[in-house]
Length: 451
Image (cartoon, rainbow, N blue to C red):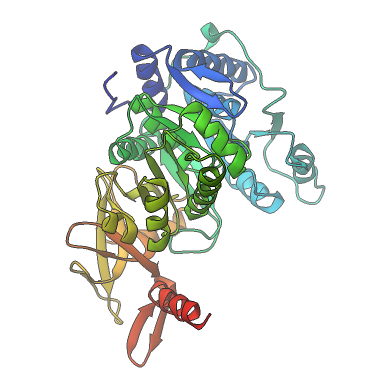
């Protein structure tokens, strides 16, 4: 068993360290059974990087890509990292308005798409965007089918790895009204260092190791994608990639490859639970026999769902919380108690500092003591470098440099964070202030009783 890697100067450096340690171990497995080792992955990424370099892609070239979760997608992303490219991943469910917005603001010189996928023609969409006569782009844009026309060349032609990759902005992620203090589209700037901090913290929180087999069934273009791969590289874990998630097919593949860590969000947990129930009824065995942990992030899960999973499947749900601006904030741990896992989003991950700030009616701020609701503010090495629109930065950070998440929460005395809603979701009645998340369970219980 190899030792985990705890530090790297860049994402590419982390890959090189892993290849030097366990070159022939499995790195990626796709849902068709194709397997790629760490050494094979690095070799392929270098070949693609050399091909892109021959096309004129160099350090700091802005590249937008929108590709589903495949081995080729991860290879491309690492090829771009090898060149020091500024890459802008877009979750492939987005369409013309979001894609055009990103291309314009990032001034992408290369846009990589999957061709026709899921019945949608991405190439045709990009042609419409770029050929609109009344809406010309101010910069030249090359369009490339990433699954058909991706170039390759001899890695010996590659330039040296950029020396400043760790602290230079290399990643631009866009959210469209899903996080932060404004609902306007925001480009979030990250460095290799900030994503490394997030992925390494995930590894420590989930205690990933060489015996684990992880899984990515969510879009790799989401910011949690590279964080998960960083966790995997640091721990020496192999990972199964699912391009189209169907719970029945996916769990058969999970069982076949001995997946030990699965998850995503509350919706995934419910699907896993339903399929596991079906498997036990029909086959007399759990759907994922090797599973040790469900883990994910997003909206808080209901305690009832947690205990259903624990009772039936026999594994904990280590849910967490993060956002584009700070991909890892808190994360449940396999060593947390059932009560902690069911009723909180976990403890702050290593390196992330979480503060709860009470804001008065006059705008005054004060630290909220344990058990008292306030706004969640965060700082640490996994925090983003600011927005692509710098005018948004002043409102996003407080006087102490902490990011204002716009989310309300409570820190318990044992350090676990419970999310209670968004700051704009506060309801005032008869002199009292209530978060919507505090009222929703009461209304739900009332509805259950009425039915």
